[in-house]
Length: 438
Image (cartoon, rainbow, N blue to C red; front, side, top):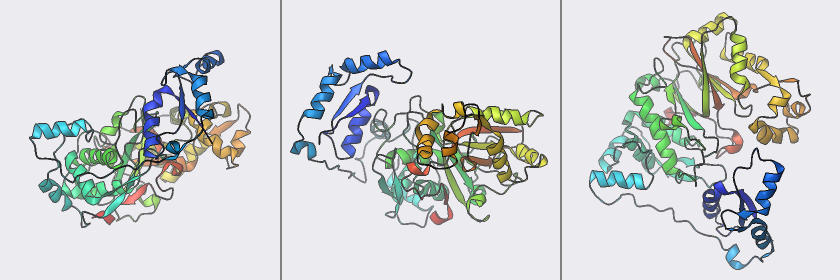
């Protein structure tokens, strides 16, 4: 039966790429101009009555033709993709090879370390795993097929990022998580990676002063390797095809990678609160957008917390990064565990129902759960406009302690672990073992 999908014209390259990689290159599609949001009914009607900006003919003619033209064998014929690639590129000068890597979009456009056989072999000394062992699979979006990759391919990207062999277990753990650091969304998220356990001190990761900044070789290169392996081993990260972030996100340069300050925290470490033993090493992947910053816990701290979180998207959650000074102050105020803080935020950070359901992600994702009868969202859907609803459910509130106690600083990042419905495997946990990759 003929069918046609209608898209906004800004997504034309993306749509062409998606139908091709899903084996349906002749899938029928028509296009309307951009933007769609915020347009009056008359303006939207003019889109329908006007030209298809991609095909250059009246939109309704394009739509009618696609719906009435019989399906033939060419329409039903799929396509096979050749994913083979040579293990080595041809020998050349360093300048030419660097240019080759840039032209093929194998870099983040910062200088890289060329991954020679000798350098990759040296990197492989960081793990006991074999070079041909499969590590996992990644994809930029949940509607694209996941690509699988080996230990050696991860090591190649670790070399490119300038990492050291002793960092490789952390990089392999991130690669095995199924969480891409090059997720494609028009809303421009990036990754955040938090490391816990003895590995932090063994490889010199920074959990204190400047932990989120460019002051640690391990933090910087592990996070960069995470980004490079994500784009190269998931089939690419190409503007307009596999990456559609409207503004992009500078966090993507090193995936906001740091260690938790377990020694300065009054609470159990993040990984221990999520099923790992204190003596184990683990890493957690989050997706984040931006953050709101403040300092201290003054007399109005409760109002401040609510104000910081009120404008965030309920479906996306929040990651609270607290300096040890802030965490200990919360303990003084009676929040003796990180779970206590989570419960307090859930209970007190509330917004009117009319604002809750106006949020983009509430309309598109929370509403889906409400319509399926999932609680508490089904109840939220029937709330009066001025009823106060929690911004976040407890599982959407993450707490991590990091910082060097030079200031009682804390940040609320919008984001959290990738929602299960968008993971390669919904059962994959966001926190994975580093020790398994030593």
